[in-house]
Amino acid sequence: MNPDAINIAIFAKAPIAGTAKTRLIPALGAAGAARLHRQLVRHAVATAQAAALGPVSLWCAPDTTHRFFRALAITTGIPLHVQHGEHLGARMHHALSALTATAPTLLIGTDCPMLDPATLQACAVALRNGEDAVFLPAEDGGYALVGLRRPQPGLFRDIDWGSDAVMAQTRDRLRDCDLRWAEPATVWDVDRPQDLARLQNSALLTVR
Image 1: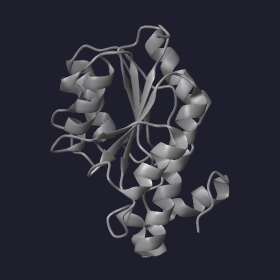
Image 2: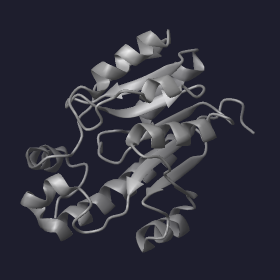
Image 3: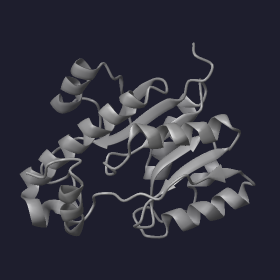
Image 4: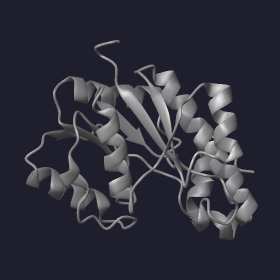
């Protein structure tokens, strides 16, 4: 095993029309939002594998049975896992607890196509240099990446998930836990109809 390896976990929902990227449905329709979600998931997997930091895994919701996940596992070789927990914080803690048992771990979602291999590598360097945690805050007040050297259940308690206070509340938890952390960059993600023009202009993905 590579002693410098860093795990990358990707959280993804199944691309089911009507439940995937629901805030984009007014602009794209249910089928269009699900189609964009599939593109975002593929992009996240390709980026994580291109970073070449260590094992990459896909953590699926509600389970691993959707044919999109199965096809992705076949074409990319990525292992599939089920997300477990009543809320996002519990699900992230579960995955990070499992993976940090073997190596420091970066966890990303699929909403941030501007994430590139170099940014993931910079986050890995922060953990290798001794930071307890690393985050990429998002412009909307959340974050697109969390990385940990070991499990930190206190980080995910009493957070208003889905609000614009997530990163600020997480910084409070980091201080409460007396942890050292890095924030190498602030990023933007694709959640709302107004984000679609920015995505189109970025040329990272084609919105269809």
